[in-house]
Length: 265
Image 1 (tube, rainbow, N blue to C red):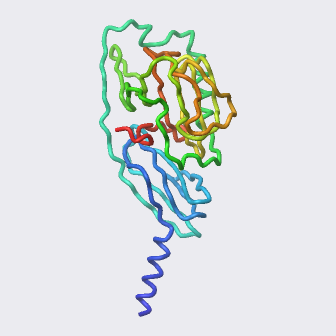
Image 2 (spheres, rainbow, N blue to C red):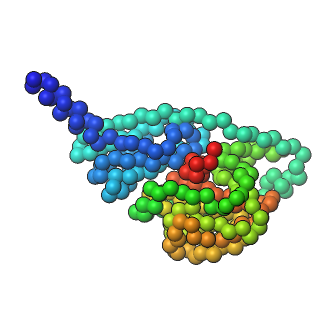
Image 3 (cartoon, rainbow, N blue to C red):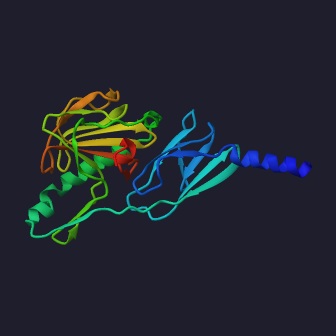
């Protein structure tokens, strides 16, 4: 009987503070976790914040090749959860015979690009206590056509370019853009070299969204925005080939697939 009681006690102490997850463990995925409030969570040895209700969040990069290890620590008791990350197949497009200026930007804009990338990186590094990331996202442009997907890559004149890390919504110029989630504006720039009219929102715990190529921006840096608020209009600013909205989703500097939070197949 004593042995039976001890076994029950051990089972309770090792399983009562486990974590549950919403989201698929595939490359590019947004993962929302839930554990017992007061627990500590480590993702691959990186400590992440846990809300008062026990929610935490993390993401899996486009090319992640190894398992993710989640460590739950509650009152000194640790439990490790190992999840295999499924590999995805991405579309690779090869284009030859392009003019060089369309493949590589001119040297005189390198410093500008470097400076603007630094601004974007700083906005994505914010680790606020906001908890908006626990809510469902909504589609930012109604009745749009998905014209570009996450993970695809072009090889131009034999030169591999950066993969596409966003989701493109093709729509008429001037179409209203809505906020996908509650958040705080951390960047509002009308004319960045690559992304043109650009907005970045902080949703808490390292989760940010970026909207680019916008014609009009209707919010300001520091402004608090509610889900569904009109934040601007579709354009073709920056290095865009036509009117569309390109949205990005990040967990700090890890680029995630927006389709994983928008239920878009």
